[in-house]
Amino acid sequence: MALRHAVLAALLDGEFSGYQLAKSFDIGVANFWHALPQQLYAELARLEDEGLVSGREVVQEGRPNKRVFTVTEEGFAELERFAAAPAKPSFIRDDLLVKVQAVDGVAAAPVIAQLRERAAVAEAKAEVLGKLLRRLRGELDEDEFLREGRRIGPYLTCQRGLAFERETREWCLRTAELLAWREGD
Amino acid sequence: MALRHAVLAALLDGEFSGYQLAKSFDIGVANFWHALPQQLYAELARLEDEGLVSGREVVQEGRPNKRVFTVTEEGFAELERFAAAPAKPSFIRDDLLVKVQAVDGVAAAPVIAQLRERAAVAEAKAEVLGKLLRRLRGELDEDEFLREGRRIGPYLTCQRGLAFERETREWCLRTAELLAWREGD
DNA sequence: GCATCATAGTCAAGGAATTGAGTAGTCATA
DNA sequence: TATGACTACTCAATTCCTTGACTATGATGC
Image (cartoon, rainbow over all chains, first blue to last red):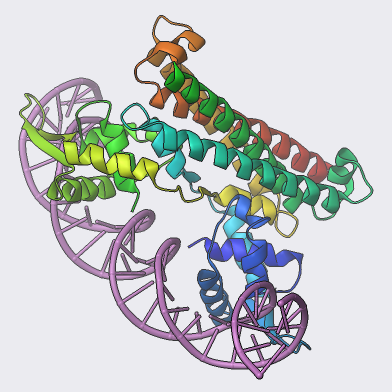
């Protein structure tokens, strides 16, 4: 159960509601953890139950009220424990790679189309991440920020995400070209 | 339910038993899909039930017998359908990145240690993948093989895996150095 | 004055994955 | 001769994740 730790880590940047997390998970934390809204709500409820986060009602005008959460002392302690514990090996799951693995045995055309689409998605995501990086470091240049910034965690993970998306794009395009060439020839 | 497709894709390269798959998943298919032995056995049983693979007993000397599986016609058809269906977005889950995200709020030392360990693991995996690539292309050079080979799927996915591991290594090392420097200063 | 979208969240069912233990034969080594 | 390591596979419990539908308010467009 490590979604909880991803949530705690995301909440280090301030108060967020389940809804906000569900939105922002897609660009920030989603570089390394993905979750649907229902999961986030459920996890936040559990975390609050266990006293690792505390929620408060925010009354809003012009839209429904929301509950925002912050990490408690116990929450920090839990993160601390988690960070010091041995990490389980990461894993990727990608339908598209399964399809490429099987491409010699199935029709290539739909796989090529999906590779190109994925390349476009990766490019868009890379751009978003690039902007996020510029926003995070503000006026400073990268080296300066990384030496002196007081909140570099998200920056570092975004760097990783950006590199990943760029490479996904390159590989998808290369692979799509190759398969298309083999089809046409 | 897409483990089944990863299994089918893996079985395109020949007959394998659950045990063999469980081993080789770690180097080949595990670049994009990870599964424990129990899951593989269960999935193979289900696939056989549904007629997508067919198993046969192989009597062995000096070790327990095993059941190896091959993809049936229906299995191919299922793969075909899968390859043509829209791919769900891939996702990554990585404890270590969660830890880095949270690194401003927790002790950095254990995170640094884990980054270095991960870098070493990634390097080892990159080497294995490099060897696998050389083995797959045999005498040919890469371009030639990709133009003319008749089984390039695994090669392409290994390329992606190799790039991923290399980048994991670079990022882990850079990040570990940075965090260590910030600690020491 | 109605439809639609965005915010904000909830509920329940079912499938998939992880955890942990267990069986059983073979082989090397100490 | 017994200890551990490897092959080969199984079972059960639990936890986790996904799918899909549902409620409700306010804002915006037509």
